[in-house]
Length: 132
Image 1 (tube, rainbow, N blue to C red):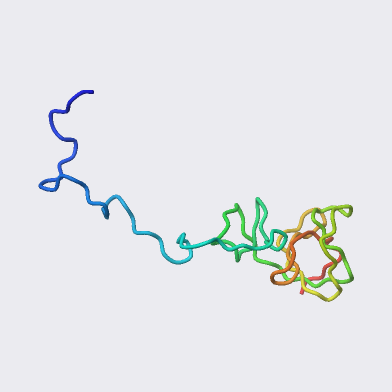
Image 2: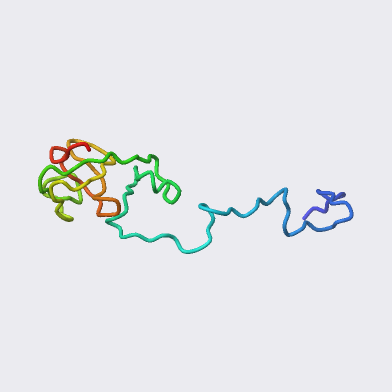
């Protein structure tokens, strides 16, 4: 190893960097983004987040390309909440007429969203929903 003729850094009389250096280390974050405890846990089928989209209320906890503000709708008649946007997909539950469904995405005649405020998440045909 080559020996240096002069020190790379001149710290003056202080020969060592302090452990807490305000020039190289920022303060630890506090509040919403601080890693201060266990993460929030929700049942997987009750969490309105996909790989490409999430409910706006999850913006501080989940990183996805897009966040959606829910569009409140009412269920017209008894309908099945499905795990995928297909009539033959697994049924998660049934949504009674008149109940609320928060639509987060509409594609190909299917709405992806959440039943109620904290209910299950899935797909419903748009023809079974009416804007509130």
